[in-house]
Image (tube, rainbow, N blue to C red; front, side, top):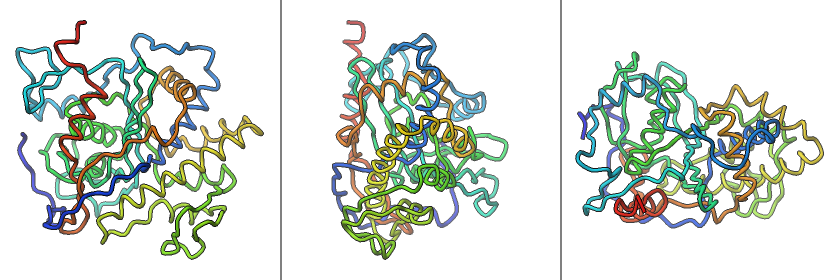
Length: 374
């Protein structure tokens, strides 16, 4: 594919022990979704009457920065010649990507702006994307799907130097794609690029991120999130007993969301399950408080602005927010990527099931080339 660049000796390597990941009916939706949707709601509340519920010309067009275009050019990407196909699978089946399916990458960022995370001349300080979810809206059928991508998924990640020049690619966990950037738009675009490549080149049109530093702000704005624990988590906090209803302090919220046993292959999956429980509690509490105080969305929009990052335009935010409200969102909308997990040299490594991934991409994003003009 590309020139492979070596990274520091501690980079994860494939281990010998493997076991199947237990399929989870519900799995983590990134906490950035929470902040993202709240921000969407805030803006949509002011411009709701300005836009209809249909797509407008120019909305959700592919939009790379000049720097990202330069990286792709330096990468010398192969293009499909003598065909109108966007993707040809390993069996020779040709597909076009549907232009009425809109995907937005939502991430929770564990930010690490520290020179200890710079590796020689490779830019490596952008923070890891700890929670990764792709919100997929089928505007034709009004179906919303949230694909959770395990942070430990092994895939090709592009690296750049401090001047933004492409330095090569490496197979490593996908969360690190964000770290090989500047912690700003470049990191976000590198993350989008890694997810697109993982999904056989599917267009990922936009991104929305929340830095973990913003979690206490969100918790305080909601008056302390109340949550009923459906499992025992006393290994995280002695008060986290099954069946208890707890109003989370800022510290407890961060504990519940971020704790992961790195020695256990399923540690990330267990954290993902807790995230979805927290997400539901946040949404329920927000809706209840909003009915009493509509100005809450203004406060959230203003206070969370410094902890969020997105390239969504105002009309795109309005359209997406209205669709989410109209369609609704429940746990059946969440899709867990299937595959197997093994322990690498230091951390767990998730390897997607290729057949499952192929079928999901073909069914969700594609139309066979021979049917594209019908």
